Length: 113
Length: 115
Image (cartoon, rainbow over all chains, first blue to last red; front, side):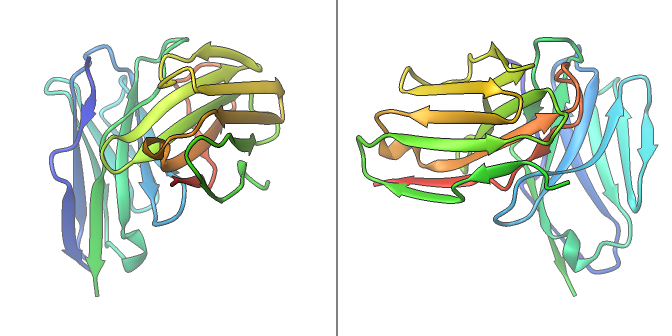
């Protein structure tokens, strides 16, 4: 079946740098996308979401970009901080009743001081 | 708001024993989801409920797994009998709308170890 996948399993950055985490999806019917952050020992925490009628959405220090042409999603974190160290998951959904979020495997972001 | 509450946080049991995991969703949310997370398979949806009614249980691995939601504020996931391969972190999540295409808020998880 179709699934969400992540390009890189790990990403290491220096504090203060910008981080970019990528996600590829294969279901062209997907209409809704979410990024979650999971810290060690905790449940996934919602960061930001975007629907397919948009190609960019900004939050506090985070930006999600959606390229429907190539089925690609990215999360940009500005001025990365040690507290951003976590596993980041993208998830997709067809935005229809009766379908569920499909999660990618996750990317580990490691921020060094 | 206390968020999604799960209990126990950790469970260690022996193969063959019954395990019951509990979840209290965020008040007012009408969708509830059970997930399992392992290193090998990532986050897998097991089952979800809308307005206390099970909608999709196709992710439930076997008949040994069952889930109930007797009311809007409580759900259980039961494994009977448990097996070592059931060892994982089990998350409960809730959502404020009946469509799945909305933000889901996760609980802290229950780490299950089956010896």
